[in-house]
Amino acid sequence: MKKKLKVLALFDAIAPTTLGQDLSAELKTEDWKTEANVLGALAQLGHSVEHQAIFDDLDLLRQKLASFAPDVIFNLADQFKNNRAWDQAIASFLDMQGVPYTGCGSTGLTLCKHKGISKKILGYHRIRVPDFVMVRRGSRIARPRRLKFPILVKPLKEEASLGISQASFVESDDQFRERVAFIHERYAGDVIAEEYIEGRELYVSVMGSLQLRVFPIRELVFREVPPDEPKIATYRAKWDEEYRKKWGLQNQFAEGLDAALVARIESTCKRIYRLLTIDGYARIDLRLTAAGEVYFIEANPNPILAEDEDFAQSAAKAGMTYPQLVDRIIRLGLKTVRD
Ligand SMILES: Nc1ncnc2c1ncn2[C@@H]1O[C@H](COP(=O)(O)OP(=O)(O)O)[C@@H](O)[C@H]1O
Ligand SMILES: [Mg+2]
Image 1 (cartoon, rainbow, N blue to C red):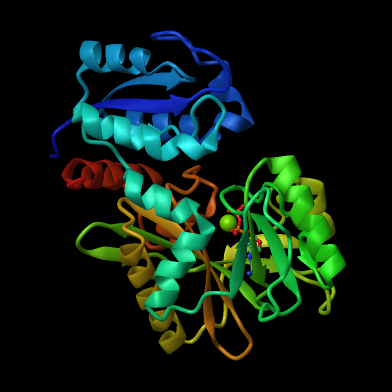
Image 2 (tube, rainbow, N blue to C red; image 1 turned 135 degrees about the vertical axis):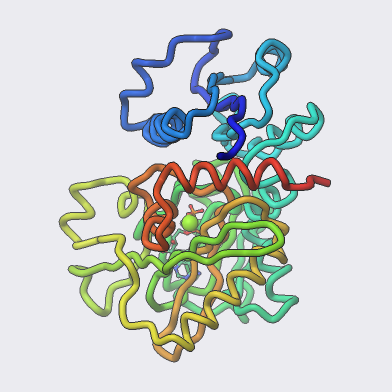
């Protein structure tokens, strides 16, 4: 039997919190599904578990670490003061406290969040990435001539498809300028504009440290979207159930990929994981073209871990129950050497 551990489940909160705050009401809501799922699994595993949510007060976390003295932190805090840009700062803070934690370290979080730097690193290593340009906020908006339409305009560092809608797909210089200016203003940040890659949308779950494991591949299918329309996992495509139903959007296991292609995708994703210095667990998003080319779109370290989301679904297909997955993530966190 494995050693039982003292686990501190660390959450973010959207408003100030207190030490030992009762979160039972929050944990019943859809927004806290991942947290509730993980706590349920930790209880089943028999670990000694406490939780702490933080908004903007790191001293609260330090107090909790001092009083509970956990063996490991299950890190589900991916924003600070309602800002998702600071998830890597939380990981850095945990590094400085010297307590092992689950998931990705700060370097991997930083590299993956920057959709330009991550593509430069991978492109240098001959992994196929869409051609792109970064447009800084405040700079002159112009499309470089080499960048061909159609183009997808995105915030450089956002997640969850914030700022991505059908209007992100642009086919003229006017549309390009308009959308870039809109993102600059609305999201107060820089833009990345990428060549639009037509193809199947694949999600590949990877975990491990020295030995990497790739789980069965998921796919977002766009059943009712007409063939000549762009297929994009926009904000509504991810989070609006009505919209998903209307357009026949469904996350499922990818069908009909032959063994050689699956092997090629797996080894590409392992390389991506290592090149972007990811630790712990991640979901790599790809596009597979009709010609069989595999394009990198984005890497998501610490992907959503709710039991019904792609990462846990993929692990389950590989024979890992949800509590087993949570336990593996903890064991991995315990032995990961952070630099
Ligand atoms: N270059 C691209 N070509 C085709 N589709 C893209 C491209 N970039 C993004 N997308 C679509 O937009 C979705 C969201 O883009 P992504 O960069 O993953 O942003 P986020 O971090 O918000 O998830 C992708 O899952 C994909 O459907
Ligand atoms: Mg994405």
